[in-house]
Length: 327
Image (cartoon, rainbow, N blue to C red; front, side):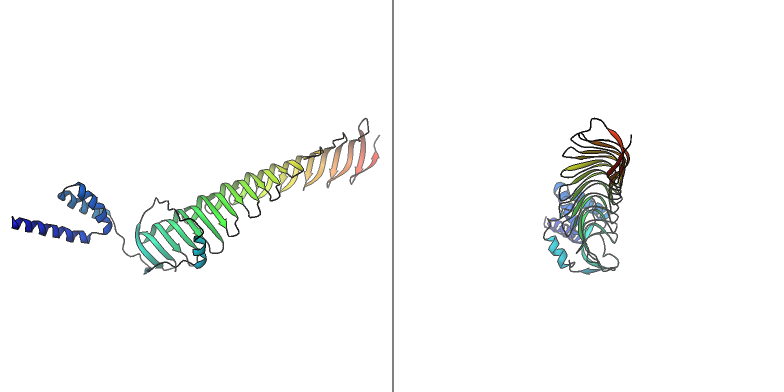
């Protein structure tokens, strides 16, 4: 019996030695199996896990360092932000902090000598990133901070902003919405420090499609945009008036209707923000002008009816003044 006990002790010692050679992560995984299964099954599980788990060696062209050095201005900015919430679908193996050949500092997970999984990096231009990596490129969810420029948190693909995210400028302006390969594209909301705001469609980095722009004084435009300008059909509202119609290059161009709160109304053609071509102007007291306009003024043949006139009469205007009646 004593000999048998001795053999059992020797056997346990051999297994302990074998466990020492197995990396900690595998030991953590196999202990739970040992508690549930027999000794023979435990031996087999160690062999299988050892084959399946590939443990990284030191990455090529990288030198171990104690920790990465985050620039002071980045640290100060990070202190104002909530702790980053890693949303990880990609996992690698954590190996510590390294100085890379391009002078970047990286602290995080690796796979096949590539940054892969969760990690933080300070680039040579002092830009800081923390989040997901895939095959040595920023990919997945993360946040990127420029020391004196902007802060972005959201989705990345192949190192570029791609998907939903938010960019915040140092002056407080921000954009929150959709990106396609580093450009605003899709639906977004942009806000400036003075209170101006745009909410609507973007295309290839520019406001394009339908949207609403609100100025700091309360004026609004709702309608179509192209290349960051009001273009197409839209309605612009001031405090005491509004215009609804065609726009080009952020100016009233084409057919439209201008209405004032006091009852005045113009329906007709515009060119470069001015009445030009045929148009009809109505006053609340019953007076009206139906005829030609040039450079914002009545100019040409028209039908005119004054406040106290029983019927309209044909007349001629020149630069906003009636010059003669036409019988």
